[in-house]
Amino acid sequence: MDYEKFLQGIAWTKSVWKQRKHADEPECHNYTCFSYSALRKRGDDYWFHLERMDRTDLEEEVVDCFLNTKRWYCHLDPPGTPERERMLCNLKKAVDKLPAYYASVHSLRIEDVDFEGSVVLKGEGKPVTFAIDSIYSIFRQVKHRFAAVAASKLMHMAFPNLFILWDDSIINRDYGYHVPKQKLEGFGKRAWSYIAFLILMQENIHHIKETSPWGSSVTNQELFRRINGQVGEKDLPITRLLDMANYAVAHPEKGAPTIKCHRCMQITNRKLDELEWSRENKVGRYKC
Image (tube, rainbow, N blue to C red; front, top):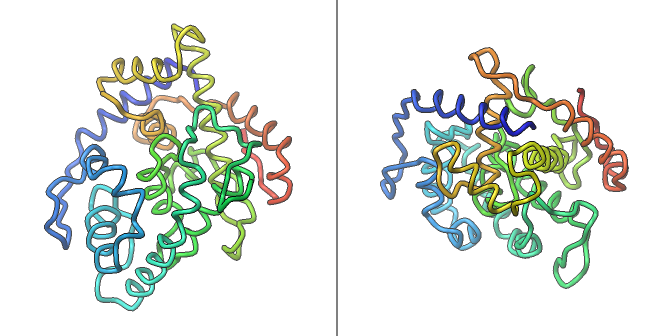
């Protein structure tokens, strides 16, 4: 994604989001604000260790006071229904499985993660792609309307420097990215490929840096700091900034600028062609 178009997309999204009204009425009374910054203030340890919560806490804290708020609405089943109870049961099982997988990707960052590299998982070397796919698959197995969007939200909150938020319009809307599908172990059917999306977002970051006024003369962290300043933010991770730009990608019908980068999609397709993981999991390709 070109640097100037990236900034244009963020500016447009901020202007649209500013006009939104969020009449949040959650079931719990622990929080009064559900903005992105408010959620992040709950702390890294909070999001990294959801396994410490029982089902009641998960329902109150994570479902009612995050995923099902008006601001972040994930369309999860309402309280008191059999579907909600089954979803909570599966969500608790999922978060209990996560600590080892979370620990394996703890030091990774989206801008420089090597998708052909390896991590240490339960004392053994495993491909990075295996670890990320496993985390995504664990969340996708929650089911009962807990799908790809809710999964990305919890993954991002645990690892804001690695995982990126997405929604249905970004994934597969007419003007979105049309993220390819893949075979996902344990899920039972083909799923939107979260890793393919991450690879595209990494390529967007590379292009943003390449076309920025500073090019390779600054570190990634300095670049992200300067971008925050350019768009009137402070300390937002590049993943959140990309999420803001991606909202513009998915909504040209609302007057968003045209910022989707077909060059980045083409390069991503070439990278997918070269990855053994891509062939093993029958990952599709971006249409560009």
